[in-house]
Image 1: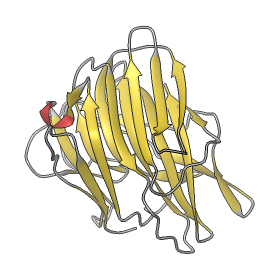
Image 2 (image 1 turned 90 degrees about the vertical axis):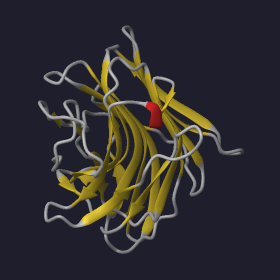
Image 3 (image 1 turned 30 degrees about the horizontal axis):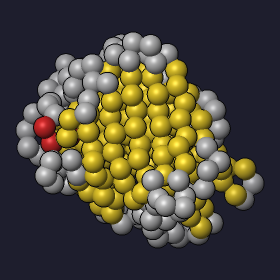
Length: 254
């Protein structure tokens, strides 16, 4: 994916999370380095208009050495068609450096296949993805958190819903963060990025970077997701609330 507007010296280009098909029923890929990405340098977080990406939408932060990024969201009701499509609401962190970055993510992989919805909690630590067998329901309140220290990087996806609670996490070697994201990330089938599933809206709340409400963290920039032809797929809203820690992403086009 590519960032189509200059937005920051640390803006990331995350790779699509992977969806593998086995027969007629798709299943998200198991362990493996499924979050390939590149990195854009030499640009600034600036301006009031949203940046654009062909691979994700949401908010990106350039806090140096932040120990954590976290957000809560409710699993949306997907409007499935016969088209296989997906999206992955996520908290993510890049550690290391722009030339040797490692990506860690806590997410729920959402997809439609054969007209039916799929929801799979997953984490990526230093580029290695592990999917959970826990069941996630529409409407569940999820908490996605990535933490980093000199000794360990940990990604945790937790269900906070009464009767459905679980916490799934993995850890790896530590590192110093240089970029944090709370985003809807694209999902891929093999090497092909899937259309965006119609998720309606995703409302993120209690977003924080390094323990600070996201509306107080600088530098930061909002990113809309567009196709390479410029068609708006996901619109990212302003950060709101008291404290300022919430925002909404809205489906516009597959």
